Image (tube, rainbow, N blue to C red; front, side, top):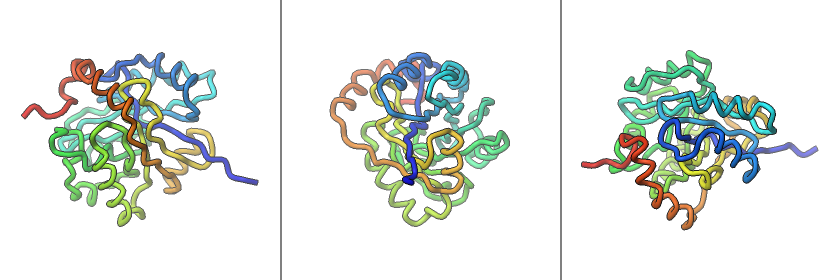
Length: 237
């Protein structure tokens, strides 16, 4: 009997932070326009959107992981299965410890993102943080326009460190049409199966693709995204 593999997008933003779509709109879009089995809502320093989305999906063939993307002094860390808001501004290790204290999974968000992308890339590509902090997973596919080189660096890093972390893919979607553009593929079909795959390091991540229409759509919506959360955008220095 062939093993079932499914896809998840575990890096999605809503209007609770700097995404342009409400939690309800995200659930509707995913249900009607994708084949994703699991998603995670990971708003910046907030869990309200994820909690709302999880409630809305209760009666749907879609599971929602409550997550958050936490600002640290070194960059952004995704906490999955972390339903209590974590205070931003700690160190990377303090933040990972806070995620683990909730029974959550800590994922390096968009590693090696370039310095001009401000605090987005954890430690702005300094591998010392990746080497020393006990993350659970490493995002090697992120669909944010213009950081494809960071994805390549992340995959290269994981060739030497695959014994330490699971690999993940997440769209980092701030607009509906980007959801699912990068994915985490896992054996099984449920959120529990996904968690087990991360813990056992059996996940796979697609590498995404260059999609001109999506990038143009992002560019057109960037002012609106930055107005919602100006601290999250590219550096102004």
